[in-house]
Amino acid sequence: PSGRKVLIVYAHQEPKSFNGSLKNIAVEELSKQGCSVTVSDLYAMHFEPRATRNDIVGSLHNSELFNYEVEAGKAYRRGGLSSDLIEEQKKVQEADLLIFQFPLYWFSMPAIMKGWMDRVLAEGFAYDFPNCYDSGLLKNKLALFSFTTGGSKEMYGKETTSGDIRYVLWPMQHGIMHFCGVKVLAPNICFSPGRVSEENRKQMLNAWAQRLKTIWKEEPINCSAEWYFK
Amino acid sequence: PSGRKVLIVYAHQEPKSFNGSLKNIAVEELSKQGCSVTVSDLYAMHFEPRATRNDIVGSLHNSELFNYEVEAGKAYRRGGLSSDLIEEQKKVQEADLLIFQFPLYWFSMPAIMKGWMDRVLAEGFAYDFPNCYDSGLLKNKLALFSFTTGGSKEMYGKETTSGDIRYVLWPMQHGIMHFCGVKVLAPNICFSPGRVSEENRKQMLNAWAQRLKTIWKEEPINCSAEWYFK
Image 1 (cartoon, chains in turn green, orange):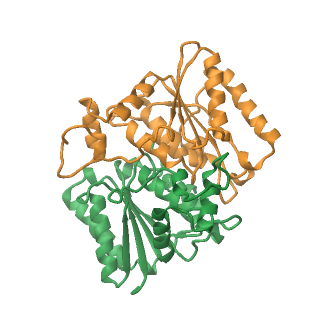
Image 2: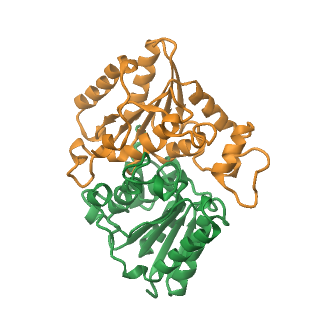
Image 3: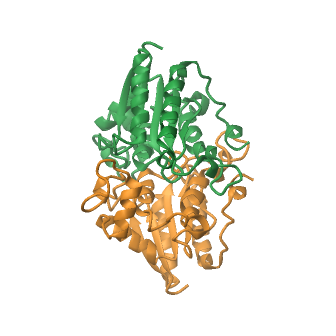
């Protein structure tokens, strides 16, 4: 794996949080392997989540009827996206593996990370009809969603009110990453680190470190409806 | 329905957009019925999507290890949330019906609206363990997700790559609204307004106006896993 490039997109406000530890472990372990690791620390960067006209430098294709997707796509092609987006796109372009590290907020990612998806994965850069799903523009990359939950593992079962945890992965893994052609590795889910013992937390951190040692040998999941809802 | 209160949480950058028209139709039709309608126009308000320490006025419960959910919950109880959140919470508290109007971004809502969920629906205000789902704190309210898609109706089928459109509704309707005790009305989905004829667009707008005439007689959906994945 020496020479492989990894981008960690990280969304937690507190460096000393469990999410912060998971991020640090990934940086350490992957660096030790000789990978080159970049972290986009979204809160520390004050990353802008709102998709607005400010993302387009210069004049608009149609200022009478602003359409974000169309304008961002045209701006991407002429190099006219705002500099924060160009920078993130460069990191994505260079990466072999994208790791998304975050606490689950409302059955999804925190808004700051959703804004990263909304703004960075522009038309023309990440997809370009009919180039989506298996022919998405970011093919030959891998993605891994690594997140913590508030609820316990038992709360996320097929027969429980909260339902299988895989249901919440559909929009993120399939609707975003697979759509862009990215192959998806199995998620790393740490259930309820805030409510378990220190011993348990250490086990979860160790398991993550161990998994990363052989991460480059893993096969992607079969990212189709059966994996999620079978 | 005279006297009923409606909050429309609206996320589109362009007033002349199809989403803008759907929002305007709801304001007009519901006002005509004698309802009192409030709109939170998130982009116009420059609504902040990021959940940060800035949401808490005054000192923190634990500044050594910042935990947003905990801090926001404690701040809510002592009236110490930032003024933008207090204002949104007042609107929610007074509303009988919440309408969320947005374009689907990446199988979900735009980041600016996700940020509204992340920040406004604080612990203690919207839920309070074990008060969640049917005993969530916002019971006796209704919610309706009204959104547009890029893809056509045919693209969202059980057997297609994009899958049933209901799969994307699980985190939003069930994971957020049902979790807070809100009853969910059937969604209003306008497929691909950008790619259909002007005639078709008018039909979709008319159908929405017609539906709103009898909206108060509608029964909520049965918001459990079967509705989404049956």
